[in-house]
Structure formats: structure tokens, C-alpha cells
Length: 451
Image 1 (cartoon, helix red, strand yellow):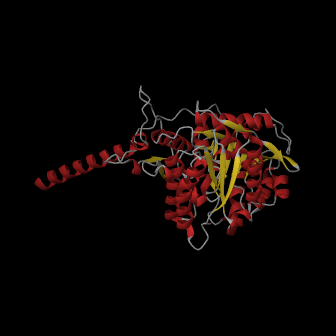
Image 2 (tube, helix red, strand yellow; image 1 turned 90 degrees about the vertical axis):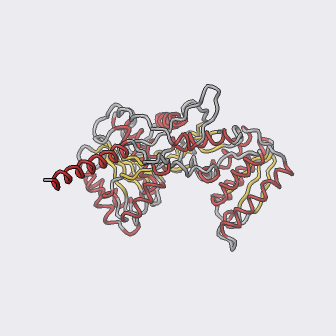
Image 3 (spheres, helix red, strand yellow; image 1 turned 60 degrees about the horizontal axis):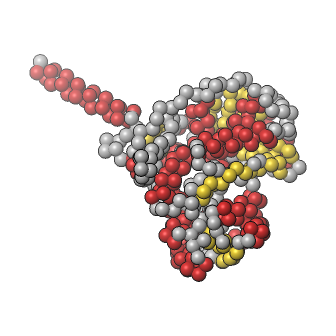
């Protein structure tokens, strides 16, 4: 009898302990409230709400990260049918966001195989499964990687033209892609040089320093970027300083490239003055460039990569308190648990988190008005914008014929998405324009922001 009573007591204690653990996990907090281990399920959204005190004293990113996210809003007014979103690992988070916005009954998420270039048959089977759902009215493919054309061709054989298909940054042959897709979204690389010069001028720069390597300048796209930046600088009355920098693929590697920037930016500021804007085509040096601009009081118009956070996450030490997803849909991945965890921890961070954290840390460092970035990250933005325009198509508000796009509606959808990200913060929008021989192949640099 005593043994039975003891057994019951132990059982009660164990149940109580498990219940406490469950309660803790439901709040998204670890037992010691460490923000770096905060986890959310796929039914939660990792938004930061950074509140300023009455005297506008900035918070630290760590204290902001410790805040409990507000409850999810109700999904927006539904549309007829469903949207299917197929992404690579990089677009995984954006598909989650669209599903949270409109509801799981309206948005289907699928993921391309990690080794997609070797899995053409699997890609075809995946889209055939999507096509089998008669309620699917739109298909967003971000990214349209190698093998997409064959998969979409099989999809079209089953569904014909009654589904609106969006390609994002296609790696496929564009002539064939234009026959299969209703809308093709790509980043406007040709306008980058002009946009950087205009942003530098708006931020008060008198000089632009352009860092690049011999390897980079052999790439036509980067050479064109340099020439357009130089031309726009001359038009605006800015001096243009062209400097060769070590490449991250040179013998010295990343360390040598980063050390050069760390040492050279102060030299250039001492010679040219603090109203000097710095730009580098070398991705590995973005964090060092931002750090030195902050320390010297110079100007950083924007990163070379079209994303909000490029370089800032390291320069501003935003790694602490990162919001992560650990409850993702494992069946959507074929790379095993290790790759799944890497995807969900490093690629599931919301743009809202970075916007709030970057703005906060820039204010703490006294660098407001001296740093800029892109208004949206392309991998995330294309999914939202493609879905938004597809809903307009489903609702009959835009042309229904393939190859015809209402640019006014597309730009409105884009601006609404970006404005929601930045709230009342000023944004310079870069509109979509048609590119090449196809009216439905559109390009945009989305927008620019001064922090």
C-alpha cells in the first residue's frame, strides 16, 4: 500500500513538472528567458514591437527581443480558391508569412528539393500534386530554379490557363519561362548604381568612394553598376573615387579583404571628410564598411546585396535574441533534420525584426541619417507582392490574358507591402517597369530607406 501511495506521489510530481514545461514552451520563453533560445511554432509570428519611452530613449536590441510578441491578427478577408507557394529554403519564411496573413485554408506551402538541380522528376511530381487541387487558383514560385519550366509545363497540362503563375528570379531560359508564367518578378540590377548615388546625395554626401575588385569588375553587371553610379554622381555634382580592394577569393581570403576596409575607410575619411559615402561590391566586407562608417561618422547609402539586413546583422551584433522557428513542417524538406534546423534558424527571421533592431541599434550608436538600406529583402518581397497581385487576378481586378500586367496595380501592391513593413518611416519607392520583349517580365529595386 505504501509503495502504491509513493508511486502516485511521484506520478503527480512528474505530471506537474511536464505541465510547467509545456506552459513555458507555449509562451515562447526558455526557463532563463534567454532571447537566443526563444522559439515559435509555425502558428506564431516573430514580430518585434519596439516601444520608445516618453523621452524617446532607445531600447537595446536585446531588451526588445525579450518582449512577448502580440497575438496574431485575424487572417485578412479571404478570396476565392487557394494560392500555392513553392519556395527554395531562402523563401521559406516568406511563404509562412503569406499563409499567416490569409490563413492555412487559403494558402498552401511547398518547398523545392534542396538538391533541386538533381531532382527534376520530384519537382514535376510536386507540382502535379498541387495541380490536383481544383481550388488552387494561383501558383507562386520563388525561386524559379533550374527544372521549374519542366515542372510548370506538366502543371499547365493538367490545369491549362485557369491558374495564375508567378516566377521569381528565374534561373531558367526566359523565352520559355515567358510562355509558361503570367508574371515574372526580378530585381532591377541595372538601376542599382543610379539609386546608390541618389541615396548618397540625399544623405548629404559630397563624395562617393567605390570599392571593388578586379574579379568583380570583370562581371558586366558590376561594371555597368560602377559606370551608372559614376554618371549619376557627376550629374549630381558628387566626386567619385574609384578604389581597388582585395577580393575575398584572393590569397588572403576574407580576412585580408575585411582588414583592408577596416584600415582604409578611416584613411579616406581623414582625407575626404565625413560627408563621404562608401559603397563596396564585395559582400564579405559589408559589416566592416558599416562599422567603420559608424565610427568615423561617414555615410553608408546601402549594402551591395538587395536585402534589408545585409551587413547590419554582424556590424550591429544582432545575433543575440534572434527569433527562430523550430516547429517547421519537416515533411516539406528532404535534406534531413540537420539541414532543416539550419534553414529554420537562419532563414526564418522576419523583416520586421531586422527593421526594428537595426533602427534601434543605429539610434544607440548616434548614426541616424548616416546609414541607409534597401526597403525590402527580395526573397521575401517577391512572394508577398506576387501573392498580392495574384489575388487581384483571382478577383478579376486586372487583365486576365497571359502577358498583360497592370503595372499601376502591381506598384500599388508593392508599395502597400513595403509601407506596412516600415510603418511611418519615409521610403523612396522604385516602381516596377517592364523589361525586355515581354510586358509581363517586370523589374524593380523596390525602395530605399535612410535609417
